[in-house]
Image (cartoon, rainbow, N blue to C red):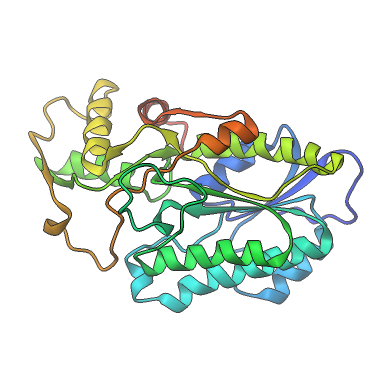
Length: 312
């Protein structure tokens, strides 16, 4: 993190919280051409300390605050509700309040898990949330904190985030596939796997357009769905990842003789997941002219990065 004083009149200043996470790491690259990026990791700023956060933002006076930090341990959140609330709700409330006071745009990420998965067709931003888990509830409360603060905000809901680094479903599946002769993967939960780099690139574009709207006095705060196109199950995602890994030489062709699809009932977890949490991203196109390609394309690009070793 680089300290700074008064906001300049030239290059936009953007503070990115959660900069060591999947999306946060990619944001540093995506925003670098258009902004002075001040990356803030957990070790540099404890988001659970309101006074530290307030002092930091009042010193830096950024035009944009991007919150890519979150408590994302879905099952653990059922046991550690207080910890999830502190990061997913209370910290967001502080960021939103400070954004309002210093006139910053707040960009905050939320999740498909704010929905219960019973609709059966893609959820729009106007559908009523009904989270099934503590994680989903605390993320919804974070959204509500943004809306209630009076700040200028973009809440970007995404889903099934993965990347070539960090802890995520893709990397876990590839690790298990290298160690086991068979895998059992849930095949009745459907969503849109979304590459962290696609999220970051779209975010950078949305920020630049929003900056122009703010300068012209026509910006409107909004919740916007931001996921890959198409959908699949966890089984479909795992199967595609393993096949791609074999083509790229990341796994021996002979590995994983059997990938077995199982229902959610055969894989009980502490937190309930929505069975269908595909998000309708039409607003993303209408508002920003953006569309993330089909999830298979993002997966292939991410796997090529893994194969090249660039993630290290």
